Image (cartoon, rainbow, N blue to C red; front, side, top):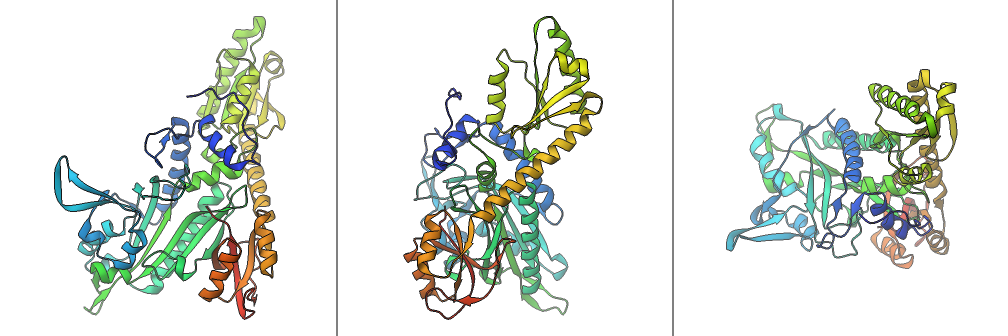
Length: 478
């Protein structure tokens, strides 16, 4: 890769910072010769592994992992008119096998409903088979016509978790939606990412859903990034794909369904929200390297320091920490820069004086230093990593809180959005007023029924027409 010793743009230039950090910290290489497709560096892929392992752990409580094909026959993809209308401009089609034209065109999945649901129709027979709760983590393809951006807006989404569940009743499916929102909260809390949850307006819901509830994060520049969605599908797809079951009375019933998705946008939020002008800041739970040991080898004590550093590394690894020792022939300051750029939470500096005193200097990624006893170093590292996690979470919460505000007029809304805020307004939920808000403020209505500890979801007068309205999130989005 290119030399990474140049100056990183400050986060005030968020776009420049984000583009630079991806290659400097070895997350993704954007030079692949197809627009909208990117390559994971090993370090970035290691972050992805820890993030998605955590997601799998949460889903495996209630779901089973599976895998469906990438290719979807045209006749299956075209069955659901409202669904295909939502994706018709985004589909990649496979038309040839080698040089032979195919009898049936094959779609590269933009999402997998039309691949999965024909199989559900074969698998579901009786109420005894319910509920069915399966998920997969796969790549999906969408011919994105807007400006592409790594991790945020891509043509190949490399890491798409999609859950598809089947239930006997509408209410049971709704309970599953709430359960999955709970999983999402737990997942993002583990990444120290504050989220807002809201119900998307009908014109912005998933094609074919009864309703869509979306999860958003507020990025450093005040724009919102959708980082999760839960859709109640009702019987919309089960009618199309004949997903029926025999109930306890021997009657045939249509199943109710949900789908739920989280993509690598979760990693975009992780990197963006916590990083600073020095580079990444990774929560210890998902850091590929939780602590780096830097031996300070001076003069005759060189071998003593290396031996002590190796023992320290061995002790920490035996305790389950992800640790590396950096013995490269570089100045200590260059090593510090290298690991700070990559967001390693903790640096352990060990020199002759430290060994003599039975201590090691622990330096948090944020710069705070503390001395730890070598005799109880595992306990000390556990404590410091917990402090680091708490600090990262508190900073992200403060960022989110400071970027939310309530406004009661269109002028105030425009001012707030221009200042990089996400606004809470009152909206009557009529499409005409919604269009006026979006057009006049160059913004998007994120949703109503807002769930956030930072938002007072009170009723009030619609800022367009003055009729009774509900608290509504409005922002500028990616």
